[in-house]
Amino acid sequence: MRLILRVWRQKNADAEGAMSTYEVDGISSDMSFLEMLDTLNEELILRGEDPVAFDHDCREGICGACSLVINGDAHGPNGVSPARADSRAWGSTTTCQLHMRSFQDGDTIDIEPWRASAFPVIKDLVVDRSAFDRIIQAGGYITAPTGSAPDAHATPVPKPDADHAFEHAECIGCGACVAACPNGAAMLFTSAKVNHLNVLPQGAPERESRVLDMVAQMDEEGFGGCTLTGECATACPKGIPLFSITRMNREFVRAVGKGR
Ligand code: FES
Image 1 (cartoon, helix red, strand yellow):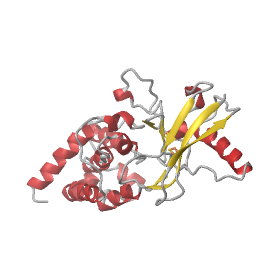
Image 2: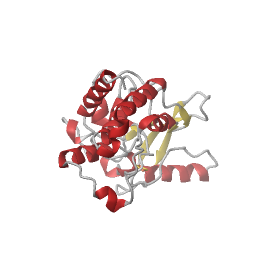
Image 3: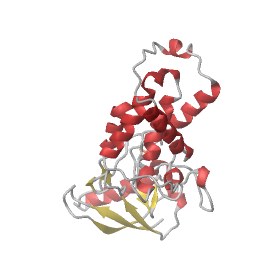
Image 4: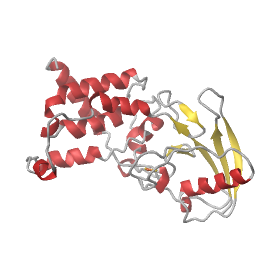
């Protein structure tokens, strides 16, 4: 498979970036998207050029490090959530789980970093997502001692609440929701983290402070306001549902009503 790649290149956070065009040949349809970029980088290194910087860690769809806008879609053409599949092909994949069989020989592929003012570009395709870490630090934890695994298992949790917590715990913090949102909002991420803990008995002591502090930190980081366009849920590779945001809004109003 021969491909034309148009890749965002930017030397550092202060430099101006631009799209650069490369041609890669001999790409197998069984390669992952990141393996295809590895092939490009090997060629660039052999030519004495600077390889393209991109983020990755597990390459198994679990860490959330890989973060590319591919042909205008966060995580590429298979990154669309089944909840919003519409007419597009879907697979709910992260970039590292996207395979080249999703492309055709001769395709031109645009590859860009996440685009959001709260995620400044560090280099090429790598962005700074530490804003998410600070939102978690503001309240994405519990203080109740849970003991060892068997002790935690002994705490009764109603099945619907456990399912709800697990559904939101699937968020891997990749940031696709922010990249896809026309406002650059982080409501889907923040709501997933709030709802995951707020529904569990272990998270109850911080139920009010958690939602207030995490939303305040989210605002402080410069994320945009949510207008419920739903693009976040469409782009989420883990299928975090849009109602997560409305549920967090209810938690927020409840916390304000209780005066914290
Ligand atoms: S590299 Fe870990 S989710 Fe893609």
